[in-house]
Length: 537
Image (tube, rainbow, N blue to C red; front, top):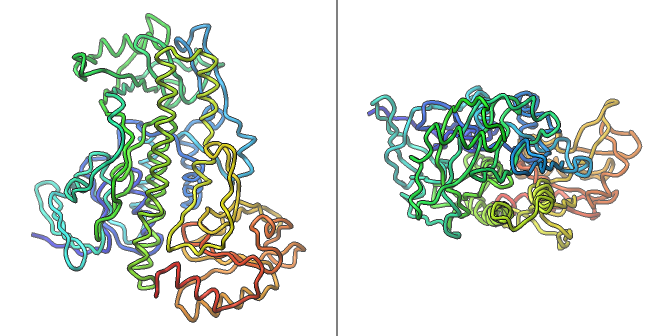
């Protein structure tokens, strides 16, 4: 049997596994990704890319490509409800982009998974140190004293893979999770669902009704998702096994009838492209780690599709885990840094799955006739913007040095994001002036720790000394209010809560690791902060 040694083995080649491969490559970590399917997804399953994920897409240099492959943002923000797509009772509402715009250099976007995965795969395969193999299945796995050993098979050939760590991104029915004996906790399944992808020339009929998502009281009640808002669409409906329902009921004839009812056009020309059964769930794994094996994405948490949170939460898992694995593998962090993965990601997953369940319950109320059309559109549109959830989450773990300040408490923590540079939170977006143009604070982050401070505070020299003492790379950004430095902003120091003398230390994943609101610059203070975050003692 052939043998292969690699630092990290990734099981699963969906958006989460591919993101893990990309992130590890950014830190110079070698990885092997294996995916049992022959190619990327043929179904546009997940479609919404959250603002936080779009920030990562921007950092990876593929934002323009993703936006070319997706829907125009004005269509992304809209939701519609009605008896059908063309009935007179149809209502449409748009999420308030203008309210969210100051919070990020980008914004949520609709790009169907079948297109998004192609872009991610191309990026992952282009990275040095990344080995991406589709049509390859992990058939055996065991933990060892040095990590894991796994057998992967492709085209009848078997190969033994030795890796220090394994990232299981193999979906809601994860065989890796099952092999580890990790249970999933949550309510019973919400329903058995069918997704039907179809082609129909609906674009001209919906010029004034374009949206990303439509909830319809047709026969059967369903949701219609726009893939390109022209010819390619997807309809989702359910069946009840307790009453004899099964996926076999959804013949092409039945699917065509359902599409025509949803469209409100009895003779609509419809081409059924694919039919996919799935189970609507809201569950979270009891553990996210078992020794050298880490669960990510649907292997760790399964959200309902209501809100579009599942894929995004999984990509944040990969983003959180990548720099930690790299720091441990390169010897700049202690093994205990990896113990912070579960306490950082599981609470976020719990909240995300719960909010997806809340969204699903609103849809159920509508489909059961317990909400009027106006109540339905108001609630559905109100839940389309979720910046408080996707940007306002924060980490509380040993990899964060708390500064004793309280977390913001918005009246609506789902909808409202309040920027803060409190340790544990995502670094706020602030526009800075540079060479006559603008750059976001988020755009300045690379693959290392970043220290941000006002010009002339002495923290730049302290950071240089701390980097020499610890061997940890620290990039320093000095920002002035009077154009005396390359980066200028009259407000950033106030927005970050550091005044004219303080500093913040940003982790490689963009979350604040430590903050000094105004103490005298100290290499020792920075050294201690790095030591705490990286579990070096």
